[in-house]
Image 1 (cartoon, helix red, strand yellow):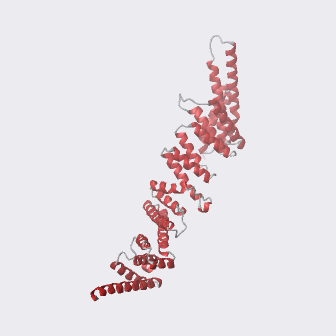
Image 2 (cartoon, one colour):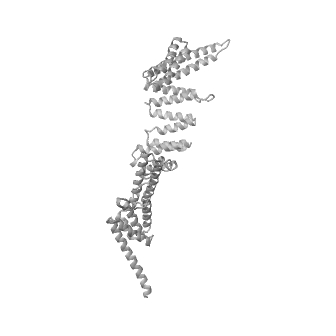
Length: 437
């Protein structure tokens, strides 16, 4: 009987003694005698690597050592990873009341230390990389932020902290670090978490720094030729940040590259309606139509040409009303009337023959008169442009000035006014000597 009882009694005493050792270890931790605690925990885990109480105390120890300059250097490089794993293994022992008591007493501090530790190291790595422009440093920051997010989601899963499926600032930082580390696939993954959740800032208040995911995704999918996702994230971005026209511009570039004029002009309609007092938007819209109608490759079929030209004039009128002295608006307005005039004169020239019918004669005369009228209408706009540009004689505006003066030469040549033609020929020839500032 003794041979049966003694081993059982020995085991009981050993367990009791071991439990007392761990109690003493916890005292060392509370008293910040970390070297003694470290020795006790290492010894305990050497005897039983699966001892959950010792594992929990290890996670607690590493958090305390990380905060203590004296002991921080003694930590292994992956101490947060080890602390996280030790804490998880300890919490699996749900039937152990000692574990539950220690965790509640510590208010889950060890796992929060892991979360904040990863986050702090990631932030330091990011700032250091930003100061140096170090791609590898950004990659390090990215990986540390990702690890912090893994811990945060573990906390959320167990309802120990109020953290959403998207840990807003942390996920944004992962995306930013990935972007700077040139890890576009990871940037895309985490920016989509922000965008798919329609996050625009903390506590649903708009924050300009949160525009980045929507801007980058819109551009990224545009460059990938994925119009569906380009529009998807562009539209979400516009919804959350209605004052940012970036999303429209990216989509407009895409439609321009794909030569999808109806979609492009629809975007311009939206923008000019949204910003009725923007000279720039009205001018850009008019310029876009002008380029399409008059500068397209030969043989290009211009659909709905007359309506487009009417829209062009409408936009020019609005831009000119907003800023009558704007040289770009005046120059384009002059070019618009000049083109109409030259086309009318060319149509008149096509009506020829030994004997013209009365209708043909009338038509030829009407087209000739209309052409001259359009050329005459172009003159004040071209002169306004040239006079405005002469105010500073800025070298950067020389090309635009010469375009305006050359246009006036062509107009007066077509109208047969040799005196005015000479004036503007001289202005053109002297431009290179005057626009030197």
